[in-house]
Amino acid sequence: NAGVTQTPKFQVLKTGQSMTLQCAQDMNHEYMSWYRQDPGMGLRLIHYSVGAGITDQGEVPNGYNVSRSTTEDFPLRLLSAAPSQTSVYFCASSPRLGDEAFFGQGTRLTVV
Amino acid sequence: RKEVEQDPGPFNVPEGATVAFNCTYSNSASQSFFWYRQDCRKEPKLLMSVYSSGNEDGRFTAQLNRASQYISLLIRDSKLSDSATYLCVVPRMDSSYKLIFGSGTRLLVRP
Image 1 (cartoon, rainbow over the protein chains, first blue to last red):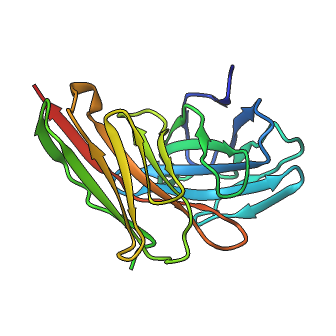
Image 2: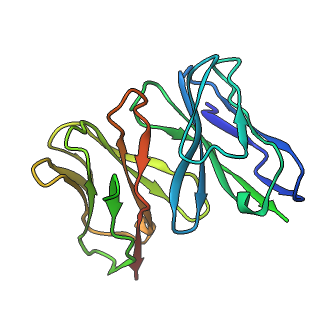
């Protein structure tokens, strides 16, 4: 039972590079979201999706894009990496709006 | 006022102790609440959901005080393995139902 799978687990980027963080869930959850977690700041919502084809911005969307072409996948794209995007990124899914979230194992991203 | 606030701690307690954390929330209309546990450098994992006055699961009890707008987490007979950060989560009461995370309370259980 895979749950929420994120890849890669670790990544180092140079400033200005772009990359995509992958997220897939096999629980048929409609609601998916991306968070970043920085020391002392808790989890902050980047983007979320309430279903295939529907995405919306969270608290800190600048510098990130998302798409949701299928129920299972919700990739997060960094357009032009900056050192301020060094963080731990978590993808999560929920069966319903406002319900508990199930998290992937996280991606540790360092931008140099 | 923050939507969800927690004492960051750390709470440093001996094994076997009882410890309680509080989490205050700003929206009096909130209906559901969650406690998550997060180990260092790992993903948050659901510990307990609360939809009414409280919930109990073994050594863990969550209690909701709607009048004062806080939810507490009580851990009895603390174990070394309980050392972690505990996150309080409250869905926002708008059309998005986004989950709002507190910044967490760190618990250290010492031998």
